[in-house]
Length: 303
Image (cartoon, rainbow, N blue to C red; front, side, top):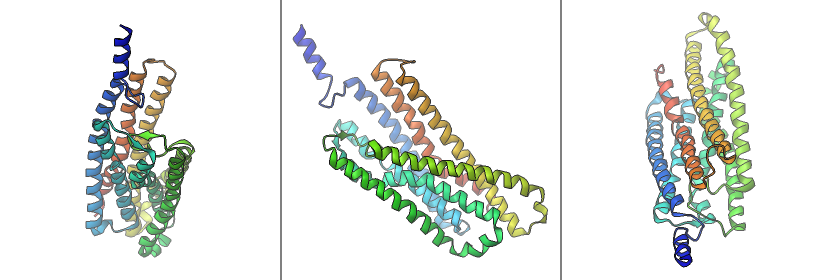
């Protein structure tokens, strides 16, 4: 009797300590994740194509929008490998995952930072319209400089991930999105994103106040200023929607994670795992809609 129970127990857990029940949950969550990722890849890739094809988007904010959407699409490309590995029930060394997720991880962090650069671009257009018109011809240089700055930071983060993987060859992963960023490297990347996000929020608040003030004497502005103000107002509203969605979904994710960690809902590890993995897809969805929301609200009035 004991032998049978021991054999059934061992057969239900693989060499990584993963039970069959946990694996089934992983499969279903991975399927959901892959569907959301395909949705994000399609929409964001379409926006990259549209912004490049139409000359009305050949401005600094249009280029930044294209880069933001491209980064979101590249981020979602991290999921197919994980989907294949989950269905094969096969894990790979962390170092191999670092190589496989190099571009998706850089893109995942660069995307929200491009929202920050867009807000800077619109703030300058709103606060210093004459200066902005004079430098608008060099918009390509601005976009290049800020993204080289961002990418240099995140190449350094990837280097830290590489060093961490070399120091921990025993770690085996399904290479899910974010698996390569662990330990202190994860905290560093998170801090960078938080700093840029908080800075973006401050700029939103300042822009909101400025738009309220400008609206009262907008009739005294010339047509060019009217156009810049209207574009800025549209971008401001769309960015506000994006940030609200991202913060709300991250808040729900963090809240449910804390509740589960304290055992207030359930103490079943399998159910906790399933719930956390499902709620994490809210974050995947938030990243997938960045570009589409910004484009759709911006497109309403740009001619």
